[in-house]
Image (tube, rainbow, N blue to C red):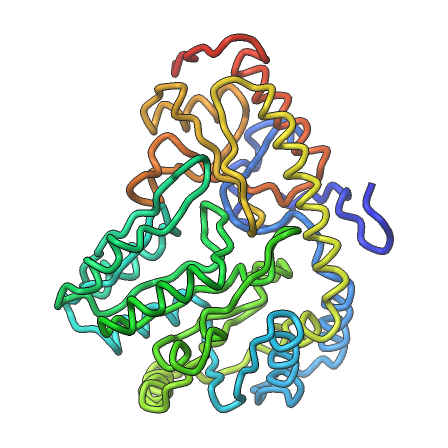
Length: 402
């Protein structure tokens, strides 16, 4: 059971609100028999400090236009300095509605139609949409799965970055969906290649605060002044504190010319209004939320241990060990099922709704991304149903997709 004062074992009925993860399943069967594991948010209540701060703001009762609260940027700066050793200059911080907006603005500002943006698939599927909708070209630098662990292909990256049309790289740090928390040495090598070839690094670091025990997150811009000058960092407490629907984001831009261009584009798009509840939620998270986050990570690590042990007994599925995030990347390729058949099998036989691996690009077919930020009881039930669907712990077999 969870230690007080945080109860991560509490079963909360999320069908009572229009939760994206649960809404497609509302009314489709007994709530306890469903395992919605596709959308990347937690089934846990937000930290008590966040809920208390939002209640105080609600009780004020006036919700007119607001400036940035005086304590928000200092809270952001203090958190990243103490948690990650990253010292952010206040003048480098720009507001953003969300991280994907920052990626889209960066692509539109610092590349031209037809330019190439490098991705490292399997990677967050919305990256592909951002590039396509800005009429840029996706340049693929697939990760390599070696010995059950994903690695960057630096030789391939160097060749790709040397192409004249390669102008930008979207870095996922930590990596969604494969769960890598890139080491300082790996990021330094990527930095050297990109700076040598004039490729701007745009780092999506929304999962930054969710490094599992034994792993340490390194902000890309914390590598040094040269790396920071060639980077745009996109950050938010949305994932770590489970406040995605009442949160915003920030873009950290060290280079003055790029920062001015970003500021001008924010102004053009009127990205200059503050949400009162987002502001108080984020400040409370960064000021007081550390103990809750540490407890949540420990709980997710316990869920991962349960999944690791159970999957070792289930033929036909392998866990790609995550180092960060609350997402598990599962390898079902031994079943020999086509992607659509695999998704249907998991839903119809096990009651699992997952993110289909092929959505994350090349190398994703035969895999599934599974969110394990749920109660342990729910995960245990889900694993029991998967074991039954896969035929228990006997010999490997190829299940029917019908």
